[in-house]
Length: 152
Image 1 (spheres, one colour):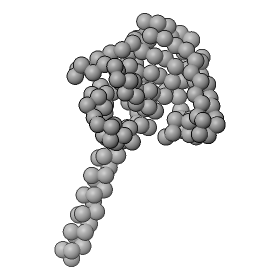
Image 2 (cartoon, rainbow, N blue to C red):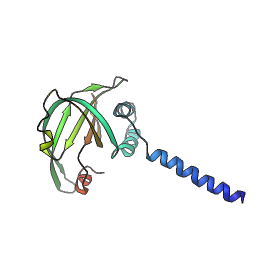
Image 3 (spheres, rainbow, N blue to C red):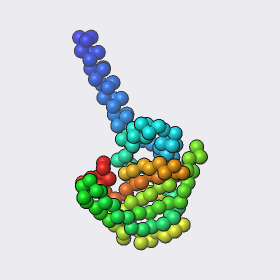
Image 4 (cartoon, rainbow, N blue to C red):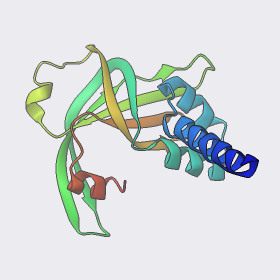
């Protein structure tokens, strides 16, 4: 009887711990600071953990334009619309930029330079550009084709 209780306790504890890690949340600033100070191996781990996760980000619009994404491995491409924000700094003084990707240009008709935006999106890429970290967010619903192109 005690052995059964121990086994049930171990299973329940394992499920609880795995559910905590599955529901892990992070702010964009925490992610950028962690990424900035990570080794290449740790960066890959952060990407694996957080790409596909929803996060809220904000910034002042620097530019809005077309972005043609093409994957040479699958010979497929798609047109998106990119909103680039001005460079910002985390509390830890790490410079970063948020890039929002959209499929529908109509959603961006009223967005202009200097516009302050705050949106929730799915992290699709994190790039260390040496002078800043760029975090790419996709705000529209991800289709199977989008996931293939973004390698998610």
